[in-house]
Length: 452
Image (cartoon, rainbow, N blue to C red; front, top):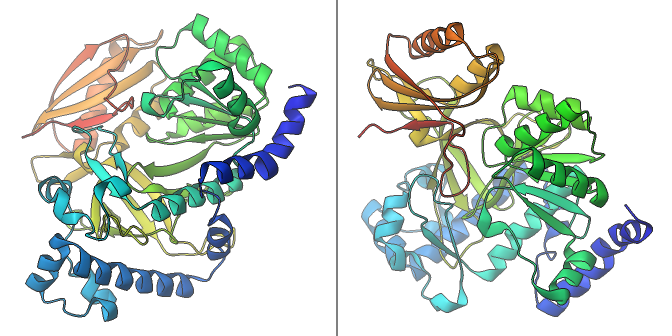
């Protein structure tokens, strides 16, 4: 890293980024300080603030959207401004099917559609679904992301690298002007997460060594492949922070990344329709929820006393398309116990991937599929990649990318291990591939339930 790059890493976050945003009328930095102050509040104040915002959003939605106006009349919620937590819990969950059916009825009558920012889900399990936000709420989401990234020692304008799968996020720099703005202001470099081979990864290594980024952000699967390449070659990259999202970050991946980069990776959870939902602190003991921007519940119905359940989100600021009790489709475990870091934000203690990635045995028991690769990898170094598919009750298919030491014993062990975790015998076929197919979003969906 040259002298000029060092100077830019110091100046850009505090000078060039604010100036650029001002000229572009981008207010992504506007609420950063507010979020940071909020994150230091005691839990009692956090919950009080959230209830007040829920009341405001519910009242606004009742008066300005067709969907919530009708819904609240049906359930007898006549005074949203004074609703209790109990009243709030009785509002029916907003599902993706409802959003598809009621799209225009969910939009605020105070905005033209052209005045809202349109985004969409990543399309991991189905076709991308459009969402709308008023611009102020969008800037609040971006501010929250910046506030939480500062926990990693990173903020906009500091040199960063992305080993990324989502092509729609990767900025293609065209012309001298765009390249100059990125070099001086944004300072982001994108590396495609696939395909990856030794020639490509050698180029990535040399480019990253030249850039000397302060942050490497990646999907776990390409990050593992690249990190293993570095380990095999004996290469080292001096990158102070590594962060991971979009897929479950498995324990063996954490150990590999920590060994090669010299620091434990930070995990975070986000979604296009919700922004940054939760982030790890330096203690890596669960992900702190962005409670200033959203209220997060875990609905444990049908999951017994396991602690995990379906994640339900309420956006506390979006009035363009109010979302109350939105079922995002992921599973998690919630804790309100204060973290030893001193922050009292509620935490997601575990993430279990998609609801649709939950397996079901013949007893009707639901078992989060992401448990399986965790257990398999811990005892099976012979496997590079794997995907587990449930086609029916007791009918599974394993897609496996074999390592050099894979053998017949490994195959039998896989079958036995699957039976052990499903608590019964299964009919299991194993298919061997050179690479696990990616979803439209670019993610590897480790577990799939394809049952009708």
